[in-house]
Image (cartoon, rainbow, N blue to C red; front, side):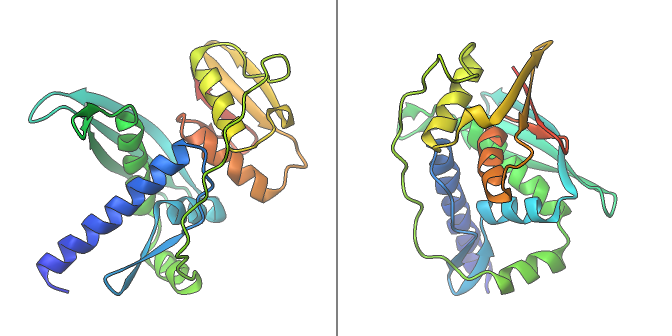
Length: 227
């Protein structure tokens, strides 16, 4: 693959990943773990997250994002991930222009963080595991379906106070996830979210996909979100 083809390959994969990120913010269930681009198979944003959850020993240590104005207005994010099994700790960077089609992009910060998270996680996954994943995972041509939003009822939803908590509640509702299967505790600006002990792995992954959009960290028993 020549230099131009290689560049085109990565540009197309990046565009597909960005589409997945935006779909995720809208509450869609992501199913495409791999892409077929220019005759090559690539792991997707969703595929990296799925593989990380499956391995269980890769975690995000820190997330940082800042807005810069030069050379153009954009959000720039840096995420540090660690592979606890092998002791590998590496950063990943991501950036996203603030303007999209002449208008401010409300998701620019989230996309920058998602890209940085993807890159950091990808950096600490052994290459052999990526290759094995690509060999074992068929390319899924179908796009995720858009779920129908529904109103979050404040009287039964534990996420009913505060802007960020409302955002999480709405995201759970769009993903059709029951907030009542979670134990919620808030202290000193940190929200601790503990799932039911009998929560199935597939359901846990769906909750995890929602909470990671709000920079949540998983500590083996619960998620923690800084408000």
